[in-house]
Image 1 (tube, rainbow, N blue to C red):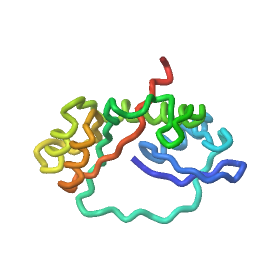
Image 2 (cartoon, helix red, strand yellow; image 1 turned 60 degrees about the horizontal axis):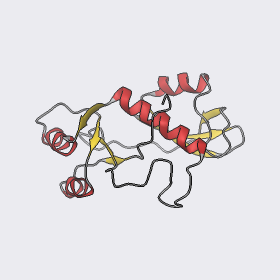
Image 3 (cartoon, one colour; image 1 turned 30 degrees about the vertical axis):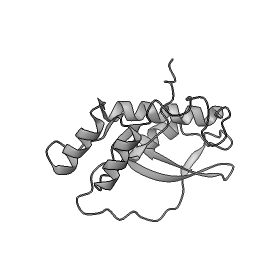
Image 4 (cartoon, rainbow, N blue to C red; image 1 turned 180 degrees about the vertical axis):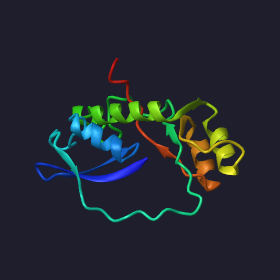
Length: 155
């Protein structure tokens, strides 16, 4: 995965994650990269500082939030409806995760540990973890990320 700082034609700055630079180019050409502020689909890469990789960097697994999280249509910060543009962005993010990563379900924490210890192939994974499991992984030095898991765009 590659992280880009982006800018729309209205000069709003935002960021995005893509499989590779070709994936960004394809999505941008198709008008599928849109500004979360104004919805403009004319996005371009912005100037950004280079990222220095750590030795033996591994892909960060993705964990879905536990079922105790707020309803997908509501933001935890505002307890109000999620803006449509944000929902669309999260739906596209979900589609990319499902397309490019392996679903390991409730075995997420154990599979992340196996990858960290070199007992299984390093790859992008996603699944379910309780807050306690996520905290234990962090205590063990295993980096994970959590994204709001919204309903699919196709229904």
